[in-house]
Length: 260
Image (cartoon, rainbow, N blue to C red; front, side, top):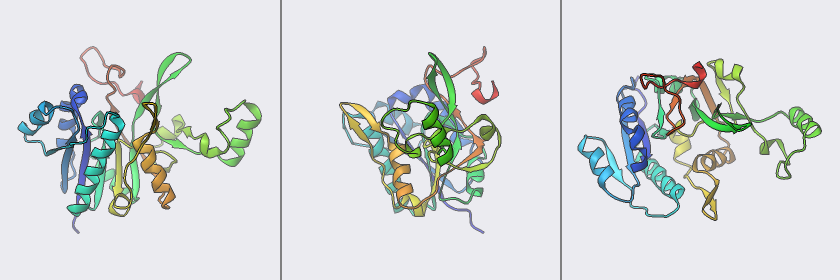
């Protein structure tokens, strides 16, 4: 049986220099064979693009010069989708340049047999004044849980239904190494089938220069509206190399927060 043809695509720009070498190295180590890698550079200048191209990287230049950075990311992601459609890929692995996949990530995500499924990484949120890692995968409260929350806490006015109050995966859910249906998955390590990615375009909403709805959230919202279910495979745990925020040991090696 032929392996599905997979495009691994990622927007990049000069601001990803701090992690780009490790990112490219990790892509080269992916064990899945029937894949192609495509980077799309949306930097203002051409230096970063030329540097990567000189290394033999499959990269194209996005000419979008929108001053709003998220709009550039949207443009680059949609260029990746167009490339995947035009070149008859079966799946699209959409990446962020600061996310490092385990070597067998594609095989594991494919085995989930879902139209939209991601691996799992963390992001940092401020809790009681301290940055703490939380899983970038959220589930909806049940109606009973939401009713209990409303009765116990003074919720903001915009929280009208459980859809306005998704929760992060609990520690036991993160540790389960299982496929789980979620409301929001990790958009920076997300595998989408052709049936899904060919029907959806990335978009974003901004107001006064601030992001209201980010590109990954808009993609997942539109996917749900089309009837697609969204999953996270917590077995595929990824490193998230957030500039200046991630933990390293004395030798400069990344310490994954789930191991600390």
